[in-house]
Length: 88
Image (cartoon, rainbow, N blue to C red; front, side):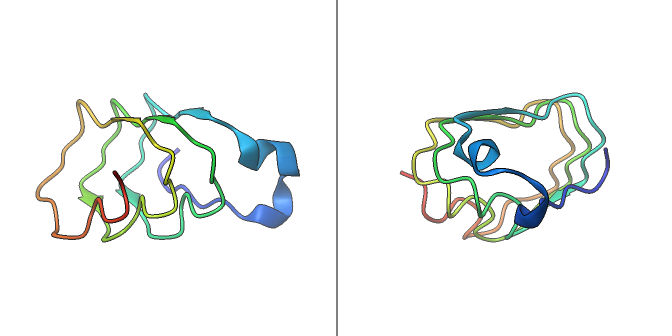
């Protein structure tokens, strides 16, 4: 898995009510602004061991309930000012 695009028309409602998302050990390169926009209830997001180089501004904005974000063992080059905008 290199590119992660989640189109809401292809999943049922329960999928978007998930509270835990485990995406570790993939080949994800980048997280986009819209990647997690439909996941309003996520409290745990594991993105460890990917090839993430870029986190776009506000890419976690809609994850207002997020408590635990794991980004270990990636290749992040830099973080922009608004990468974590909207998180508490």
